[in-house]
Amino acid sequence: MSENKTKKWFSSGAFLHDKTLALVLWFGLSFIAVLLDFLHDKTNNYIIFKHVYIHTLQHVNLYLEYPQQYVDVNLYGPIFSIVMAPFALLPDWLGIICWGMFNTAILYVAIRKLPIDVKWQNAILILCAHEMMNAASWLQSNPLIIACIIFGFVFIHEGKNIWALFFIMLATFVKLYGIVGFAFFFFSKDKLSFIKWTIIWGAVFFVLPMLLAPPSFVFHSYQDWYEALTHKAAKNVNPNDDNDYQDICVMGMIRRIFNLPDFRNIYITIPAMLIFGLQYLRYQYFSDLRFRLYFLCSVLITTVIFTTSAESPTYIIAFPGVCIWYVLQKHTKMINAIFIFALLLTSFSYSDIFTPYVRDHIIRPYSLKALPCFVLWIIIAWQIFSKQFLSVDRNLILEKAI
View 1 (cartoon, rainbow, N blue to C red):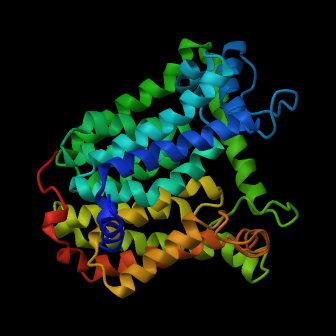
View 2: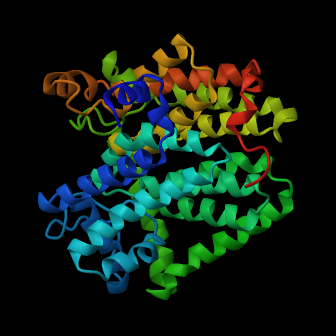
């Protein structure tokens, strides 16, 4: 490509629609991140996940500390033992790479399933590639969780409740975040079928760990899981716990910026849930794909910015919502400025774009990664209330089920 063509390619924004670039950035950056984790022995999260499978086989408590094996504790549901089994059976070096790339691949497929024109799918992948790399570097399951939420949305759009509930319930039994998939309930044409498959898949995922351990152990593990999550929620907001890698949410931002360690979550979560719930008042547009996509963006961002468990890699759940919103907009200077603000402060907040001092003394300690997503969440809510979603260019979306 000549220099002039290259400049035109970038200046026109055509690079955002390039499928090859999307593939290279999405998988290339993630693979580099996973490989560096392995080479630098930063694989603690994978070791925790692997031992969910091992400890289930050994019938030992899944949620205690095991300092001789790993740092921190497991916070995933018993079904995670089944999810991790194929990876845990591999040699660690191969299991780590396969686990990291599996998460990368499943979110790639989910984004490709969105009822959005392919060139805009490419844009979403390119714009999210850095956040995907960040998530991959932590070897966590967040890409799997958002993939399940998106699959739930897509299959409800397609009228396939059996598959929609498979993914929604799987994500819920793995990390509870998946429960937000039930926000799409009113988009289902057959609500009795939705309820039926919720019950069926709920029962399946509840008992599936019994393939590896006796029922009594599995039942007790669910109780242990609840206690572990309760303890973790209290720890996240403990003013005596000097850990600014957690509580990267709206409530954490308020606690830290205004030095209000005892600020209660309900002061934010109750108004937030009220605003979120009011979006359902646009019920006459539930079948309108433009509304559905806006609502998906709202759900993905809500899932992260109002939970004290949010940390940097959790934003791979929220940031695709930001990017989906962006491609649906008419790209005015204001819209571009809002997105660039989100891209820099959310996706690149822990990168070398900012100096170590800014990262370590301003962005992370004050939970500023949450700020652009919160601003955008308010904008999306307003756009839904004011029916601005109706102005979406229909050429961007695929009206019919995929």
